[in-house]
Amino acid sequence: MKILLIGRSGQIAWELRRTLACLGNVIALDRHSSPLEIDLMNADSIRAAVRAIGPRLIVNAGAYTAVDKAEQEQDQAWRVNATAPGLLAECSAELGAGLVHYSTDYVFSGDARAPYREESATDPQNVYGLSKLEGEKAIAAVGIPHFILRTAWVYGERGSNFLLTMLRLMRERDVLPIVSDQIGAPTWSRLIAEATAALIMRSTNNELFAPDDKSGVYHLSCGGETSWYDFACRIKALGQAAGILPESCAILKAITGAAYPTAAKRPAYSVLSNAKLARQFGLQLPHWESALELCIAGQAKA
Image 1 (tube, rainbow, N blue to C red):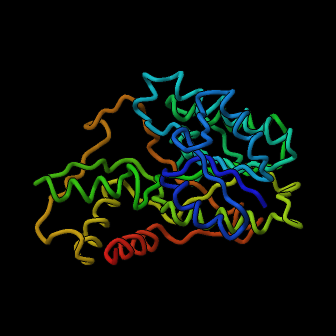
Image 2: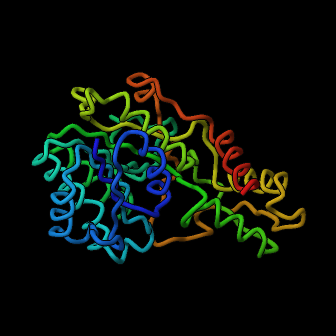
């Protein structure tokens, strides 16, 4: 199976280059790839790249993820997160290909107090969430075989993410304030990529991606829930135990979100229910603490 992977060096895309390799011929493109590139800001670039590759499956791990910056750069966020997914779906329809696309917990308001299900009412509170939700709708409207995988609080060993930021700041600062009243489920990018590969394998028939009636939105995040503050505390404890943080590093201080204002409003609660994915495909990611322990153990060995 020929697979077009959009994104090469992002957190999820980097891991997908490895996990998808066992499923077929993976061609990973972004706007800096050579000799062929794909620029999600440019409709002509999207169409040209997809037609040149002629994939059986498109996996879109490209996104505009600068949540605060999106409040000012609304056009860029909309082109990448809302318009481009619809164009990819149209290209997939032309080729008879399937599409896997990643979305976010930020499509929800954050007012709930129990994990959000796929059918829960959406109500994004910022431009990033709005643009990602419109991308979901654009894909669904085309009617191709597809999986939209909503995930949350993604971290990994590459790119810009909470884990790497905390490890750096804990070495540099004496005191580090962390928001304690926003609740979610930290999710390791490697597990997202491994679950994606398993999902594709369980949806493949004679080397053709064919989810049939199982097309649609699925939540894909680690189990459990925590605050940013407690997440940071666990990073510190595991980092010190693994020897990648010194015994004397930043003191962590719990603060409210109101004490740390940002350009974009964040949901206070964005835990996702993963029951549908487990029910339909038998896939379930581990508890967030177990995943974090594995990730940090891997960093210690590197």
